[in-house]
Length: 91
Image (tube, rainbow, N blue to C red; front, side, top):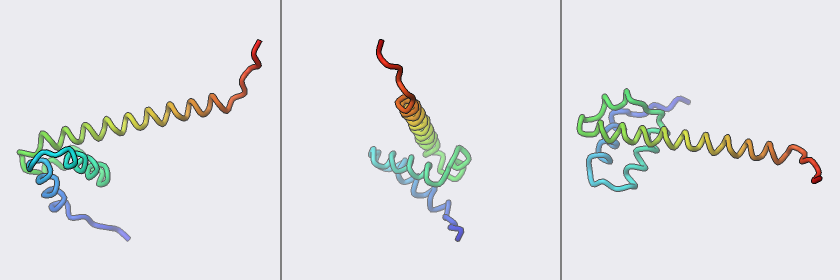
């Protein structure tokens, strides 16, 4: 089943969160909306110009979080691989 999402309503929700009272919770929710709906720079065209700058900042924050998570995953995998390899006996 394909779910269609009303992007006009999503744009309104993001505008309200970015142009209303600035709460950390609202910024985090916008980042989650960007992530969950795979939004990119082109979505800003649906937003009021007063929300463009903050939307792009949230998009950048989401991308930094994604990169940090990838780095942590790679580090963890390397650590696990090195633990699974037999260690030479001490001399």
